[in-house]
Image (cartoon, rainbow, N blue to C red; front, side, top):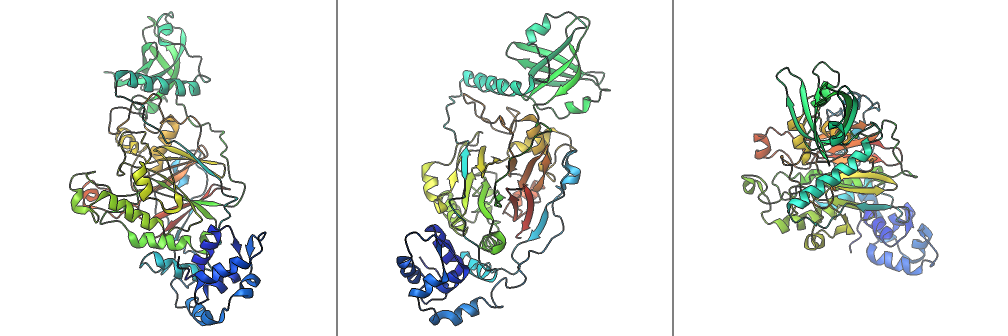
Amino acid sequence: MPLETPVHVANELARRGYNADPEAVTLLASTADPGRALERTLETVPDDAVKLTAAHVKEVVDTRSRSNASSDRAGSNAPGSTDPTPVEDPPVSTGNPATESEDAGDAAPVETKGVDGADTAGSDSSAGAGTTRGGRAPADPAQQSVSVEGDISSTGTGEYSDFVAVFRDRYEKLSKQLRGRVNHRPSDAIESMPGNSEAAMVGMVSDIRSTASGHWLVELEDTNGTFPCLVMKDRDIAELVEELLLDEVIAVDGTLADDGGILFVDSLYFPEIPRTYEPSTADREVEAALISDVHVGSQEFEADAWHRFTDWLHTADADRVEYLLIAGDMVEGVGVYPGQDEELDIVDLYEQYERFNEYLKEVPGDMEIIMIPGNHDAVRLAEPQPAFDEELRDIMSAHDARISGNPSTATVEGVDVLMYHGVSLDEVIAELPDEKATYDEPHKPMYQLLKKRHVAPQFGGQTRLAPEEKDHLVMETVPDIFHSGHVHKLGYGKYHNVLTINSGCWQAQTDFQERMNIDPDVAYAPIVSLDTLDLRIHDFE
């Protein structure tokens, strides 16, 4: 393969398991035929050597023939040859942690521009950026650690029994998280208790309605039956009713009416993230880039911004970025919304994935890539979504990316990252008051999903849910990072110490989005330090 830049030489050495001195890389890149020079050098390197030095190169390679060309390429005329420090930019997201949550207390992440003046002609533009920044130091594969859980093989048949099974599994999983907070009784046992008794119940919300007096009547269902619970409008907990969605699991306690036929609620509990939760962190200084909604195939895909992003990944500023997590919608798809065919740059679905794979090749070869599908991708729409089939996996072969279902949990250097594309955010935003969930602050509806410990709690609404033998959408364990997309808006913050990120998109506003009043946040790359969970936002627009 051609090795015309120090970046490409360093990546090829890393692929073969070698670290290298910067001088050695520069010497190889300055030869007339870097590929042949690299092969000749490696033939003479001792078997036990793991680091290539300048001395190894000088023993076998005549570096004089291209030394002048090398100095010219590294000079001031190269793209991005200005001060390599990213330019700090004013905040662009409404996701200011100081106002997001009562316990979000961390300062807002630094937001920076990408590589100033970087060439955007295509994947070869990484040469200029890499050279002027001193080049990306290759990652050590021996230190990298990643595993992914979430890919499923569909077992549902659509029979009534499947619906019963998935709801029963949801109830059992979430009720376990609530039973320690209340002295709960089954619904039929509460029915037999005398009036004015104290009682508590764990149940699934089957109905919410207001009474003629303005109070809230919430009907809860468990495996034994249903029971009505009344939340008085003048109680502090009344505002919590505004956060309820049908089919989520909660707990209540209170006092039965005189006739025992209704429970007057004193307290209401969600499964929640414990306030004392302490996230796991990596044992070394390493970073991950979290992006979503690339939408290759759309006329509005921001290819130049993508090139600036991948150029930057080849620079020294991105030395520690060893992981790329993509939360769905790799391509624009076909037939997803009315009139979409008029906004396509690539009309064939498989050609869209082929082009996406070409863009993926621009990412440094030593980076681990994890991908899940979204609602524009060529998998079933109903969640949980299985991973891409073998044909699409073969097309998206760049870097041997790890491909899983939606949602999935990627454990990266000991840090659990819950990746969920985010279709249910539309429903949460539609159902809850603006102060609880809006498109402009997409991290807030994500907080609601964390509180409910379920990524798509409401069945039968806008989100298509598949009946399986188990409910794969429950958050059985607490993630350290919650990463989502779908709504094309950037937002971030911490909810009970869980770093929550909605990463925006790489698609400018389409005519359809304009009609839907969607103003996307385009070409932002949240970068997370896995050892500290600090966040910086790079702007490549």
